[in-house]
Image 1 (cartoon, helix red, strand yellow):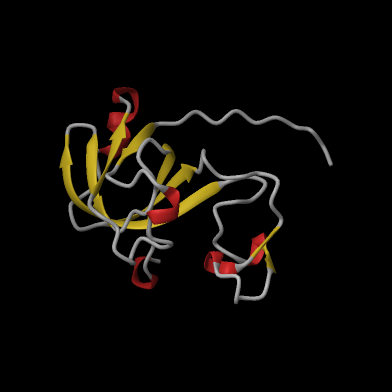
Image 2: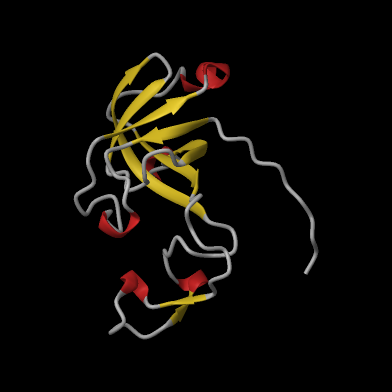
Length: 137
């Protein structure tokens, strides 16, 4: 495998009451608390068209994930048959990139309050993308 290197620069971080991976919900819609995306002032202009009520995809770097895992029991449930990580939503994977579909509930300065984010406190935010609905095309 090639050893190419890519530099990812976080644009902010997650602020959340979630700080224990084992206690966090597996998916954002499974009881995640309100969280905040605290973005760097240098990228604040990129937020200018975001609106309360909009759905966005938050791209994170799952910094506490294991990168040497290629197979898991889905949802950490040993009664589930083991599967390759590329067919699961496991955080543990060679490149632990998180994709989180969230709804914006407030925007204050360069902070975005969101619902349905299961990322842990301090998780680096790499990017934000709009959710494209079929009628948007």
